[in-house]
Length: 188
Image (cartoon, rainbow, N blue to C red; front, side, top):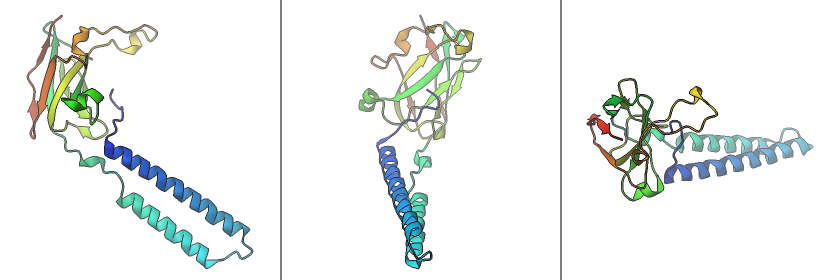
């Protein structure tokens, strides 16, 4: 799940707008250069200025009107996971927004991989370290590394109940501060 790009409604608008701008820009540039090449007059200043202004406006629009990924405010979230009182090194923790958004998995999805002592620090890709303020359901899975047997059908080392989004057992809240969660103590 790490590195997976999660789109919000605003991201879709930015992607659609950006695609439209790039398409219009490319079409106009091709038309501009084909008129210059087919023109009997090599130095038509009106065409040159039109291309210059078109390029300037599109560049300014992309720079000033771009999507601001830094607008999502994140707060540090740390915790630990134990299974049978042992650290679950390598397990994955994912926070899904609680409530109505959970059903459709919208918004940012903070995630982390557990270290040797079972600890984790949440990251929200592509925004950075931490998680947005809110209530979350917590999903935890623990699959062996792929390099142990890349052809095998990996089996979750944890009971499936901890990774089931339709019936979540674990919850967490992120507040506008440093968040040190109580350890998640998982049982078979």
